[in-house]
Image (cartoon, rainbow, N blue to C red; front, side, top):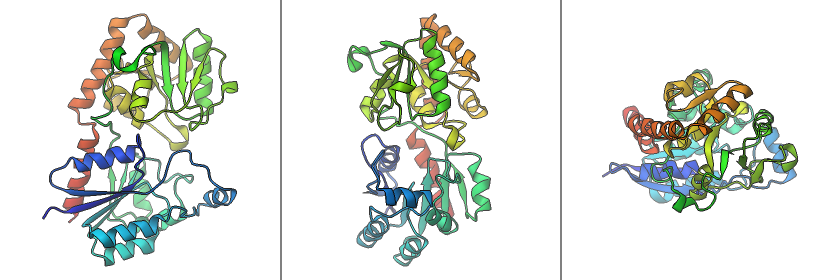
Length: 344
């Protein structure tokens, strides 16, 4: 009988955890059961819960430990994969093994070792997972130093069913209405760079007014600030700008980000912060345009806006790179499964 994988993580529409679950569900050699952890983006928390989070002792307000154990008791999985929960306790992992689970796998899309991500329950549990998957190259040796048995580097990914080019007919009147678009959370450095770009006359739209933490008063008067979008609406939003901007999250020490793969897979002409990992995945000048300063950012955007043929070519080349080099969630799922089966 095919092994049963219990995938435990957030499953709201547009979440990358749901995209990873669906990639496993497309694999013929597995039976896959998805259990929603209940976590959502931007949920409101009480003062007590916020205080506990600051102390790195988050409250298991969604009863994740009990729901995970209940699912394991009811279904008898061979493999349990937990996607980015910060509250699963070491005792829960011991109970899962007692229930017959053969492989315990943890996946983190974030900088798992950073203080704001590494809760005390997660820190205590690290040596008890068979495999800990990280998307950060620098986390691999850091996790080893924290007692992780096997730290597995898994690259960022795009969803082949979701992240595709859209046409004007798909998007509507907002299709490439703006010169440049950015989608993501507020950071001071990002705001500074985007304001500098807008001050040069670039027509700019930002998505992230609510869940992304942006405020109109922090932005140049010409910037159009809109609410966060997810799923298919998120894909359409990237098509509202002629150029897609890819900033990295400084708090997570990013050298590459999920949006890098998503933007490229959608065929959007990408201007992104230049790093060694961006250059390793996409050819600078042909598959994306890198920048290291506000002046380089301005010149990169203006250059693409002045040359439609090159702009379109950069987007197409980035998409080809995603497809031919295996940057999809399906390819990443196969890498993870191979590692799990090898560990068996």
